[in-house]
Image (cartoon, rainbow, N blue to C red; front, side, top):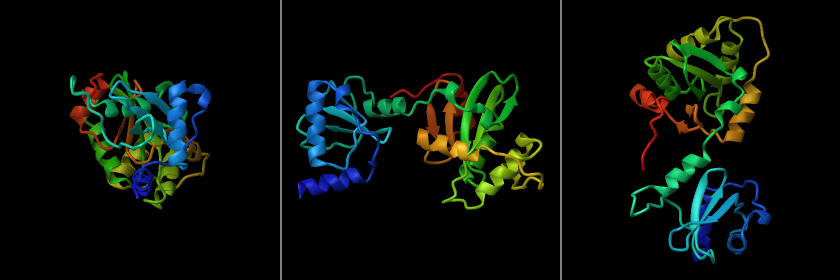
Length: 246
């Protein structure tokens, strides 16, 4: 019964990923990995390391899914690990680090570039034309200046079946920035024009690689990723380098 319970527990948030090669692990980690795989064969571990907390081992799945176990894999612990001395949320810090993106590797030529003010600060956002929270984020971004915004058109067909056609129309418009703003804020479709090549398939592949599972998803210049809508005041803080303290 215990084994079945643990399988149900982990199956709710884990999915298959690239397995971790034993050659990358120390002797102790190899033993722990083997114990996990024996009891939970569907789990594919991407990272495994011992923590400084009471013999706990940290394992990573699916890019940024973190759980803890002991050397015998006698339990699976899902949730936040808090350092009692410093009050740091160790798990949250680790997930934030795992989700970090190298900004200079993003294919910015495939994004709509919007320069506001001097444009010195930078961020990228994955956005769906029919996403209500993308609309709210866009309204907040209107209040921010001295920033260059790279908008990756990321329609999610399962949620918004018409979003793909709208994204293509925006990309093929003579003025992409205006077409995007008119669509996202006013619901005005760009005038029909000549068809053009678009980067939507490339962006979809990028989003899958980066595990962008929802919109909006914001990426700041230092690689920090924030899912969801953020008020302008908080955007200003993050653009200026302030980071959450656990």
